[in-house]
Length: 287
Image (cartoon, rainbow, N blue to C red):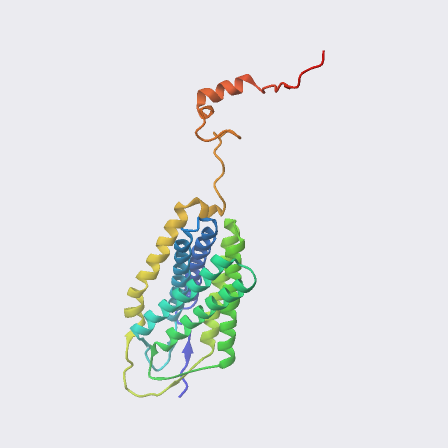
């Protein structure tokens, strides 16, 4: 018996919250990736790792927030803890590989294609691995065309996001890129869910695993903590927000070293009082 699948059992609440989580993870991850390009080489791995963790956590949280609104009439849905953890690990690791490729090779040509492909496959793998962790009284089947479309959307979204991270230096540009990335990632999820068909067995055998509320609620603490950490770093690092080195101090006189005696206020005032200095030629004059 084919079960009635409902991906919006809470209306638009779960899609909107899922989209916001994807945008948040994308925004923080892209800004950290941009910061890696401005940081000294020794600091670059840390920024790239934080960016990968933020994007992976955001995508994973998006997926399972959306899954809280997924129901099948006639059977409860449970989740396997190990598979759910594995989907989070796959998301962070594969997104990290893609980000490190672009972070060290640049967001152009082969590096962008390879990094975007790996990152997109990581997002899609997270989705379908999480789906494989579902347990219900029935059999799940997928439409091949819709699955392929969701994977293509994930790779395209990842490539566009990594390109923006490598090119963008302005804050508004990165915000726009994160909104587009969130839309594409959430779209990938719901395209993948549109491929799902459930055939309910109709037996009284209980499904193994834990319910969504019992498992996913506590598990989201970790990814949300990663997003909070990345948010704190972004807020307190002006280079991440502005995307360029901070402006030169107004007290700094052009051409004068920072520790020069002329940097003292009293010396600066005397220099201003003198006005422009005339440069006399040392060329001997003819008599």
